[in-house]
Structure formats: structure tokens, C-alpha cells
Length: 341
Image 1 (cartoon, rainbow, N blue to C red):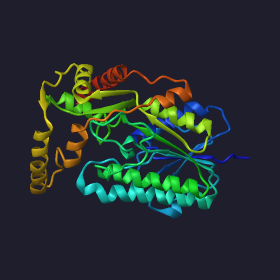
Image 2: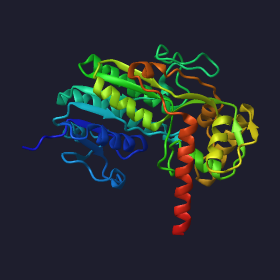
Image 3: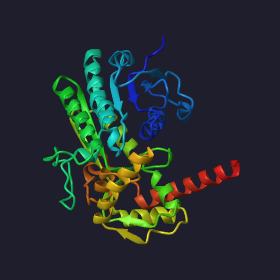
Image 4: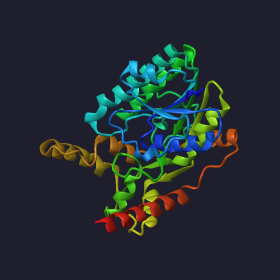
């Protein structure tokens, strides 16, 4: 008799979700557990590759509760990686719809379907952090002020729904990755777009700093939470705290480009984003910098990701080596595209 899948992965065709799908394939191997991948009708499934025996895809949408209820049939555990990321002001309402209301729908349907557990991929953006403030830990649980980006606001709304689900009977685990680095989709908003910026010759760097973690470490931590199966598990995932100057220098070096030489202080980008907004409205194009990207790259945040290392016994991948590896991938990609043209 066919054994139905008992794990549902959302966001499987996205940047992080694609890595999670591949990680689950390797991790589960010949185990009895099988996955169902929630995809949209418009999703490109080619990146998923062949699915293991017993795995399946199902068409659904976070904002279509009925499709979620169908997707959750027989499911024991959800890994919720689907999310919309944008720093464009016009995307605010859509992010709230996808990230906030979509997670509420998922939690409601999980409770209705009798699903036992939810592993939620959140973000350090929802934590109580202040630019130039102390190192952020999971003790800094809720922001004292309104989050400074629409993305953070939408992820904060999503996480509230997850903890509501726990109060109503779901077993939950929440992971908080910092800026995720990994080879993949260079066309969208994902971090690898930084390599395109380095290749373009833009020779400036902002004043801020951020935390970074390899996408493979986020996958490992998700699988750890899946296996550990402890209600209320929370892990902040951060391998290194780096200035944007040093980060952009390493990225440039990874592809043989010139490192950024000119500092852009906060007051300059504060003047630029309103001008860019006006240009965008006049031309119909998206602005190169917005108020939210200005705040993001000019803020200085540091994070403590050591709790995951202590709990799992695994060290994070070295961020310098991760950047070098992505740079090698990017050069091969560019070479292949040049040959094709």
C-alpha cells in the first residue's frame, strides 16, 4: 500500500525552499518519511529535479485556505519556508498578504487538519534590534518599536500567528536566520544579487554592518529542528557579523572585480532615496534605493548565533569560504552564458 507523505514543505521552488527540498532528499534517504511540496500553478518545477519515490507536489496557495486543507491531508509536520521579500514600498500590502495572512491561513488549516508540528523559517528582522545597539540574542524577542521595514513587519505578523498556533495546540519550532548567502537565483531579490552589483563595477559601500549565514547552515538547522522535535525550539542562525565594506570586498575578490573604494555615508543615501523615488514615479521603473534599503544597509546590527552551535554540536561554515564558493559558481555561470551567446 502506498505510504502518503507526512511532511509538507512550503516555498519549495524559492531560493531557500529549493535548498531545503534538496536537503530533505539527502537527509531522509530511505527513511519512511516522505515530502509533499506545496507549489503554485505558475511555479517552475525544473529546479527541483526528480523527486524520490513517494514524494509529490501539490498545487496550492497560502491565500487559498481550501487548497491548504487539501495539501495538509495526512501531514504530520510542516516546514514553512514560503515568504515574499521586498524593500519596495509598493509591495508592502502584498507582503502582508503573503507573509502575514498566508501564515495565518496555514496555521488555521493545520489546526483544522490535525497537523501536529510546524517548523517556521522566520528572520532576525523580527527581533528587538537597534542599530549600533548590543549584540542581538533570542532574549530580544519582540521589537519595542515598529519594525523599520515592511518585510520585517510582515514576518513579525507571521510569527505571531505561529505562536498563536502553539497556544491552540501546534508543536512549533522557529528559526531566525540573518542574511542568507548561497548560490542561486541571481534574477530576484535574493542575496546573490550582490555578486551582480560587484560585477557591475559599482565602487561604493555603505556604513552599515550585518550578520551572515550560509544557506546550507539554515538547511542543517531546519533538519536539526525537524529531528529534535521539541516544542518551542528557537534558534538564531548567524555565522559572522561583518561590515558591508568587508563583505563587498570579499564578494568582489571572489569574482576578480575591484573592491569598493568609496564610502557612502548615511546622509548621502538619505538624500538619494527620495530622488530615486521621484525618478521611479516619473519613469515607471523600480527605484534602485528606497527608504527601507537605505535603513537596511546603513544600520549596524550584530547577532549571537551560538545557541544553535551548542545545541547541535555543529560549527557554522566559514563565511569567507562561502563567499569564495559562490564567486566560483558565479564565474562559471557567466562563462556559460557568454559561450551560449
